Length: 154
Length: 154
Image (cartoon, rainbow over all chains, first blue to last red; front, side, top):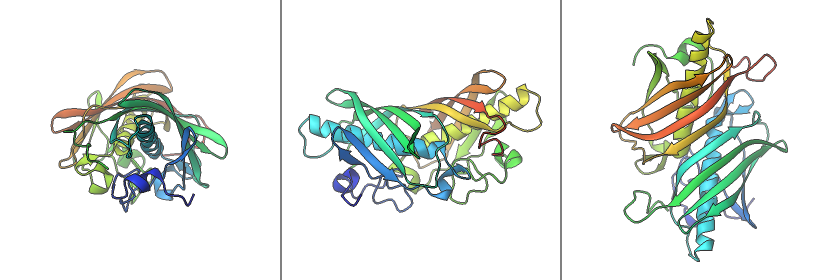
C-alpha cells in the first residue's frame, strides 16, 4: 500500500508506540479506508514474537487496539462532517486469540464500526494471517473533550 | 526487586516481547509472587507512550496479558504440585483503561486468580500508577497440551 495512511495524513507527528508515524521504535500501523472498512498490512518482526514463529498476544492487542481506534476516529469524522478525525482514546478493548499468529508473512487487519453515537464508537477488528482469522478485537473508543490530556493528541 | 522473577527462574531463555528475559528489545516484565498475588514493577520508556507522558494502551495490554499469564502458570504449578509452571497461552484478555497512565514514575502490576480448573485459570490484574488504578485486565489462560506449538515455550 503506497497510498498515505490515515495516520500519515492526519497525525504525521504522532509518536504513539502502535500507530505513530513519528515513533522510531514503534509499530507504525498504517490504517487505510476501504469502503465501510479500514484495513492495514503489517510485517511482524522477530522481536515481536511470543515464541519462535508466533506473534506476541500483546503486540496483537496493540495492533488491533490502535487500528480500531483509528477506525473509530475516521468514522466519527465522516459521520459528524468534520475535516479532521477527532482525538479518540480507548475506553476498553477485548482480544480473543483463536490460534497462533504466524510471523513469517505479512498479516492483515480489518475493522468495522458496530455502532456509534456522536462521540464514541464500538469497533470490531480481525487479524488475518495465512488466510485465517487468528485473533479478534472488540473495543469502545471515545472522542475526548477539551481539557482531556489527549485532546491535542493529533 | 532484586530477587529473581518467575520468568528468570523458569524461562531464562524465553524471548517473548512482553516477558522474555532473553528478548533484547522486549519489555522484560518481571513477575514476583507475593502471597496469593503476583506483582511486578515496570519503568515506562518514552517510546512506549501513546502521546507525551501517557503510556500506550497496547503496552498496557501487553504488560497485563503477560503478567496475568504468568500468574496463571504459577498458580497451576502450585495447584497441581508441579516443579515447573506449565506452558500457558492466552485464550482472551480484556483491558479497561480507566484513566491515562503516567510514564514519569515506575508503575505497579498486581494480579490474582479468580477461578481455575486443572488446565486453565481466569486472572484479574490491575495497573497502578501514582497510587491510582489506571487500567484493569481480565483474561483466560490455558495450559497447552503436547503437540501445541507453545508446549515447549519454556
